[in-house]
Amino acid sequence: MSSDEKQITVSFILEVIGRPPEHLVETLKKLISQIREEKGIKIIQDKVNEPVLMKDQKDFYTDFAEIELEIDSVLNLILLMFKYMPAHIEIIHPDEIKLKHNDLNLALNELIRRLHGYDEIARIIQAEKAILEKKLKAVLEQKGESEKQPESKPKKANSKQKNN
Image (cartoon, rainbow, N blue to C red):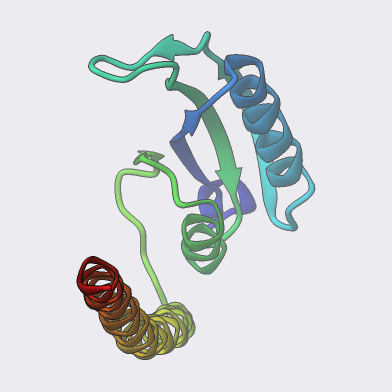
């Protein structure tokens, strides 16, 4: 296999949502610039589209960039996917990708490592959410009790005043 045949040509679509619309264009250009600096990656062409106001949303926009890349390995393709999380990916060339088992092992182990990292983050967030829910419930119960107490005390004070 020649070095040209090892290159993987890929089309990525990166999508962003937010406001103001100028920020979306700026963000996509920054992401493209970061991809340009990645080792083993060459940008063939890129196009940032104009932001569009989202349907049923007030002042929220969506924008996307189309990027055609040459990537030197399947491992770099997988790393790029995890790092930039494209909305869509299409392998343009080659029609078939032949892998040595060691290259596939590296790619799969990197995938597993990343998934374990995301799973750990999700578990931490779930635990923190449970703690926050308990604290919020306690605060709301305490607030509810404090609101009930002042209501009953003034009524007693008013009844004493009427009697006097």
